[in-house]
Image 1 (cartoon, rainbow, N blue to C red):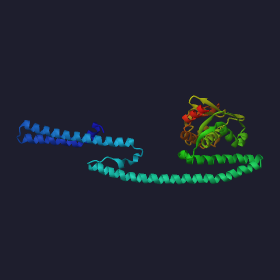
Image 2: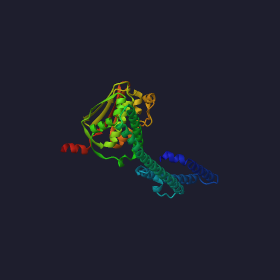
Image 3: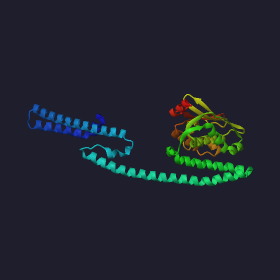
Image 4: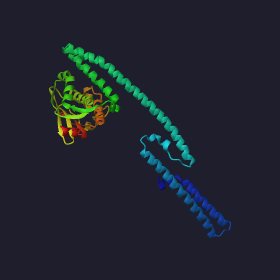
Length: 340
């Protein structure tokens, strides 16, 4: 609270005080009191009023400074009403009671939303686990009866499995810490496994993959596999003609290990690059192919943030795209390397 704000708030009362002092001064002069006596009484009135307003301003300022300090220190700021300092003023106590009543309704609503969200997440996870069984069954049937038709079925079934995985990982995005397990992970094994799962999809789209991954990092194997899978599917989805090549390599930098996925596909327009990780953003390429959901790269970014990995994109239209996962070198990793 600033002094000018306080004066503006109390302006009518201050004007009333000045008006009353002038009326008293005029009355005393009209009734025959000496001028110096009238000035003395008027001056005392103004001094008393000034002391009152000055003291009131100081108290109100300290009161709101205390509330601001509490608000800055609180994590759950909607609980301010429960911690508001006591005040002798009736209006402060009434405001505090109203804020507490309002906060109670907010907290009840938050708890209800959290419960609904938890139940929905549990339903999605349960549904995903149930649907995985027939998806796996279709894959096994296709593997045991290999022909051109079953390969096409397998490819479409793999797409279904990918969308199901997206639903699962989206539902779990806010609770990654409950599911991940950080351990030493060979990036070559991750990439090879993902490419193997998508082999028919790559063959069908005439995409060749070249892998040079010779580094290990400390991360969660399952979540990284999902991210790599999304990046590979994006490269294939936005290929630029036949015979596309996908280069996957790792490099050791000063700040960590970089996993790069480079293709020679359609590329991304310069003006669209800053938005590729936005939720629901499909871009001109997505609208052209008609098969984009705008969720794949969004989920990749969200999961990378949760895992402490930086994800970056470099692209030029019609000249391909580079997606880079930057794994930081942690103390544990450095300690292990020093012992080996």
